[in-house]
Image 1 (spheres, rainbow, N blue to C red):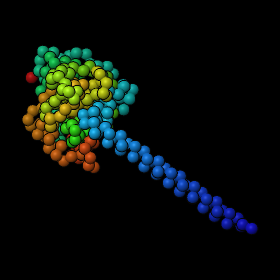
Image 2 (tube, rainbow, N blue to C red; image 1 turned 180 degrees about the vertical axis):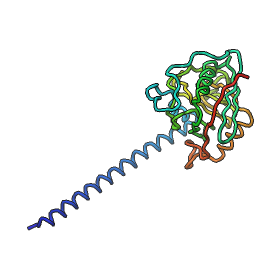
Image 3 (cartoon, helix red, strand yellow; image 1 turned 90 degrees about the horizontal axis):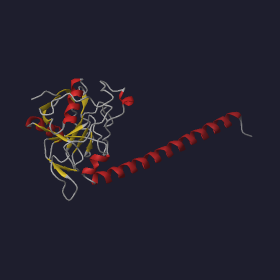
Image 4 (cartoon, helix red, strand yellow; image 1 turned 30 degrees about the horizontal axis):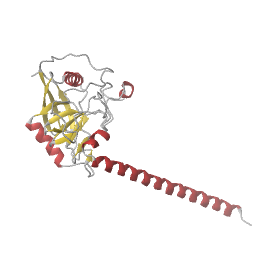
Length: 254
């Protein structure tokens, strides 16, 4: 006959065994899930430029989601308030050096106007450059107030100047020379927001990203120094090992 103490110990042991089994099954599922993710990333990275389109480029969250970001931009594209015939400069003060980006409003009026509106509100101040790629394409991506590739100003701006770098070659891509600055998007037309990427080494990409500026030599060198340190944790696509914070952004007329 089983005593009450023995019965309690038996029940406790069975409970422990069930917990262990659940933990083992959970670990197995996690490994399977991670294996699938790794396989998908490997396929995407093998696609070269396509990787940039498919991974972590969400931009332009709706205004409701944007309420958690600080500071917050308006819920709609800002009214045109720049001189469309003028040239402007996107001046970024970062903890890794100054980056000055020449912009031509005649070619990209919506983009320049949006950057000026956001910069005037301090939108970029204190934000991190959240992504560095070191294989296939060579860019540092910035402009996300959330720091995870999912943030945006709550509105979208139209694509502009898509033929500014020439016609696509047989591979469907065009050359983005080192120093080029272009808008990130969600791989769909007219989905630019606040995220942009700085090309630190010649790259080939589809002509679906608005090229709106050119870094000065000092700024390009600063970005190249960040790229030399590589991606945090290794790999070829992720947060830069040398973190970059945009301390302040300004868009003066030149």
